[in-house]
Length: 169
Image (cartoon, rainbow, N blue to C red; front, side):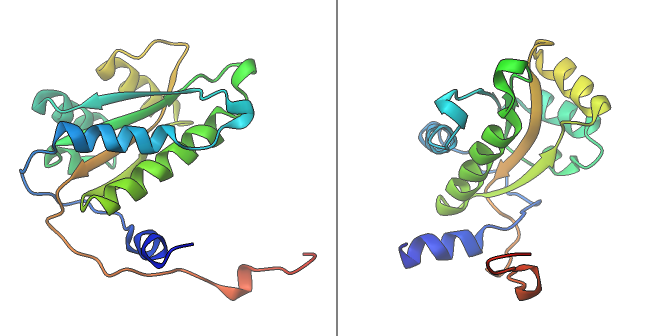
């Protein structure tokens, strides 16, 4: 593993304050490419993404998500969605892997981002579905609020030896 990759992992922090600077289309595509490079069970890739840059929609998402007030400042939100059907029984894990790739790519691009949980909270799922026009057969797993950071946090690890078991519990 390259030292640069490890430093990107440690530098990934939840950033909730942003400047008004827009994010380029090239960077948005890179974020989505990174997300879709994630592993998925049986390579089924159950994910879909809703890219939101319109101020009115960002503000509406900020209003309906109880912890989404940073979306009032964000210039980009990506909703990571999946198909919660019997044929896609690992969709949550697959979409979570895609989300982490997206968050790491944001950090590598010098952007700030934070993961806002939606699924399995039915009130949040219904509200986000309504705002974004997501069909009933698809569930929004999360919203990723993204922007150029207006705050800085130190890189860190949260390693805790007491949570590590060797060979057996």
